[in-house]
Length: 146
Image 1: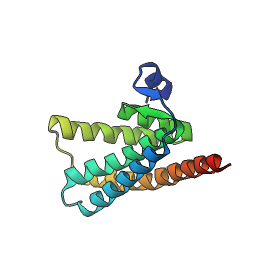
Image 2 (image 1 turned 60 degrees about the horizontal axis):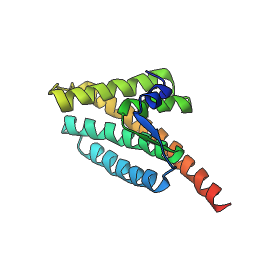
Image 3 (image 1 turned 120 degrees about the vertical axis):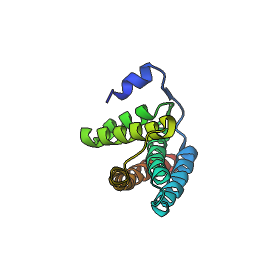
Image 4 (image 1 turned 60 degrees about the vertical axis):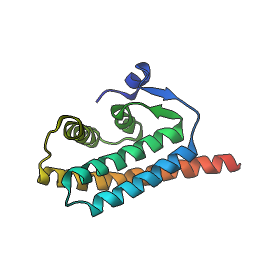
């Protein structure tokens, strides 16, 4: 996985004003999407896509809180390095991104058992990311009240 600074240099991520309302909106969308994914497991393709998108939205929410706007899924994933996510976790999320892109844009089929395993993994990362971004927002809210 490339470093986040690479994406900054390539202008695939831009520095912006911290945007807490955007982050909160992305969290709402992510929560709705993960609920949809959990209810839709019979339709593996769409549940898989929704699981991935829910995690991506939380990663973008983190970026909004700290003052970035990403135009690259890879950049959003790379930013997890800033929070000491392990390289295997980051690589797994990036591999899921590739599977999702192959399915969505190139008509590739996703193996049902593999997709279910990936969705379980994404749900666990969703919970971790939700705690992380909620903590960042809480910190920002406290800073503004001072």
